[in-house]
Image (tube, rainbow over all chains, first blue to last red; front, side, top):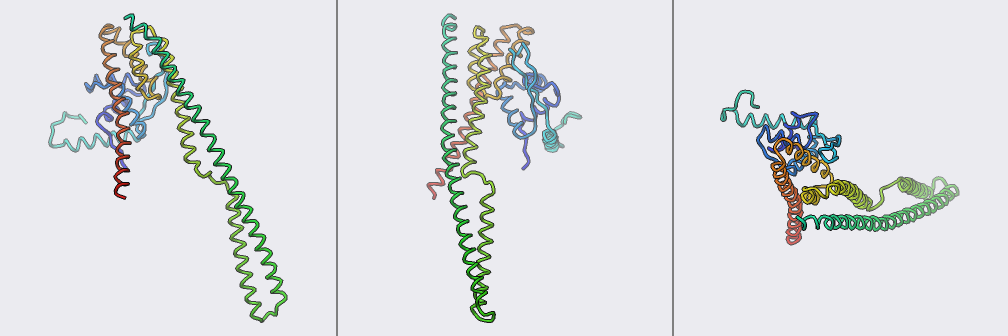
Length: 109
Length: 230
């Protein structure tokens, strides 16, 4: 069965792709706020990342601990090949649904 | 403010007691689990041994009967009816022996213990509970290091609701954001943002947990409906 992506999941996957290899929780959250103007709580972000990890669309590994994090380790996320495929598929679906009905800027999708 | 400070240590003690209770509960559960494991394996071994002895006894009986039939064949006249009947009986007996031999070989193969799937599932669950408790206690130690800080109660609130595997990352992210924002936007804005983030995160994680329980409720409802219909 094909696994589909929700709207927040698509945005998170795009943020992870943009930030790789420096994509960890805080940076992803900031990227979502800066680019998509989407305020997301850490709770919602990690719940979505958990879901993506369960679906096999992202992988994660423990990073280094820094003093500004109170000595707590980071967790870096990376999009898996199946995650990239799912993202492309989702964007294609949106593009085909919007074609001829909505005037999207050139190269938007 | 004084009241706020006065309760910091008792709250920490309460959390430690809570974790201690969890450790005791896990220890009791693991001890309780070892009893059915021994019981199950004992029963399983006994049943297998009994079956093996039974097969062996039946095989040797069949061998004896087969030998008797062979003796009768040898002593009888080749063209007589008795001779062909004896041959048929012998073939049947040899087939029985082969069947029993296969059964014995099958018994000798290692087989999963009856009920082992359930027991293994429970044991794995206990193992993951221990791992989670370990990471929870590590995260709590980090929070305790900043017991005098302004974020103590907020961190504790998050500590209670975050799933164990995400505690370290989520708290670290919030702290990093707070540190960076306090240098750029000022401490008051950073604190306000931090509080808002904690409230939103607690809300989201509580909702996530609630949703899981509602899924169980739906399953229970379906089961009840099915039982009523049946």
